[in-house]
Image (cartoon, rainbow, N blue to C red; front, side, top):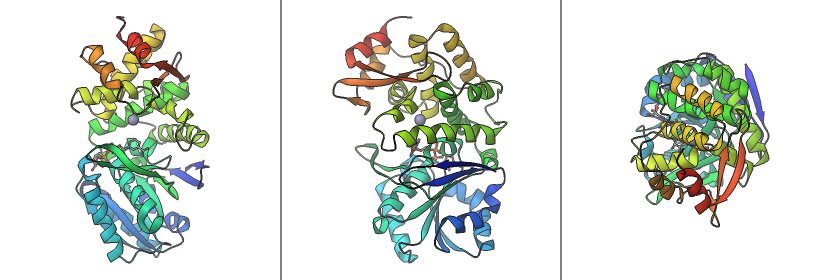
Amino acid sequence: MRRISVHASTDYDVLVEHGLLRQCGSLLAGAAVTRHFVIVTDDTVDELYSKDLLHALDMAGCKAECFVFPHGEASKCSGTLLKLYDFLCESGITRSDCLIALGGGVVGDLTGFAAATFLRGIRYIQIPTTLLAQIDSSVGGKTAINIPGGKNLVGAFKQPSLVICDPDTLKTLPGHILSDGIAEAIKYGMIRDPGLFALLDAHNSDNVLPQADEIIARCVTIKRDIVAKDEFDTGERMLLNFGHTLGHAIERHSEFAYTHGQAVAAGMCMLSARTAAPAVTARLIGCVNNYGLPTDYDAPMQELTALCGHDKKRMGGELSYVVCPAIGQGEIRKASFPDFCRMMEESL
Ligand SMILES: NC(=O)c1ccc[n+]([C@@H]2O[C@H](COP(=O)([O-])OP(=O)(O)OC[C@H]3O[C@@H](n4cnc5c(N)ncnc54)[C@H](O)[C@@H]3O)[C@@H](O)[C@H]2O)c1
Ligand SMILES: [Zn+2]
């Protein structure tokens, strides 16, 4: 089993091993001070994995109830949150009890926010079942829900007590959801880890991820190291945004026809083409292509940069963005918004 220890305001471990979901009862019991859990999950993941988790908890002498909501981003909202609070009241959850987020980033963000706020804070454990959740959203302690004013506008920093990643759960993921997560894995390779990039570059399938445990562990280690230096997102955590400033603009411009992973993949390639040596961009494009992810987005650059102006990383007229002059070497750059637009809009 791979163990990545995270040192933040609360210390916790991220455990990665094939088959861990079926055997995690004693690990869950050990990370909590209770034998009473509430599992929060969506309907798709419930069908696939709740039974295994309930059995594992039962074997460890724990009891659990399941709160299940419809899958999809639309459920990450105040309506679902209020229903979850009601469920926790009915279940008699006390401050010493523990929530378990079983699912993708939607489940993790919503459960984490409920754990941060219910009874002014209770423990929660993450069991992420998408690649994106395993390598990104379950680590770092950012939790949130969406409100009509925008995505992730209401949230809290709340670290989990434990994260359990079972790469076997990725086998049931539809290919396009897996490749969304792969875009983030490529990002980690680009900003910090040429070895990880090489591992990803060696494969070429959008349906399976060989050496998933190694890839997950490397990504989590990078996120751990960056978050340790910047738990509350005021500086170095910006590195994790490689491809995201442009990516968010592409998501919005396409009216979300491009998924987050697709937009980030295109955003990384388009930014790299303007800021890195051609050989670096060629390798990035080759790797992104391997997984059926887009390397470009067809729209006038002015329309995209106009949307970059809304990015929340823009502060006081300055915009921060990340460049990778070499694979594994992400650097944060700052520019005035007009200078950033000029750089992006210059024809290649
Ligand atoms: N907190 C953070 O730091 C952070 C970071 C990145 C993204 N996020 C958030 O994460 C969310 C996106 O996460 P996501 O991509 O995991 O989306 P998701 O949770 O909606 O999962 C995607 C789909 O996959 C299904 N699914 C999950 N696991 C499965 C499995 N093993 N087999 C088959 N189907 C499965 C789900 O039911 C869902 O329909 C967004 O809300 C985003 O804002 C948070
Ligand atoms: Zn992302």
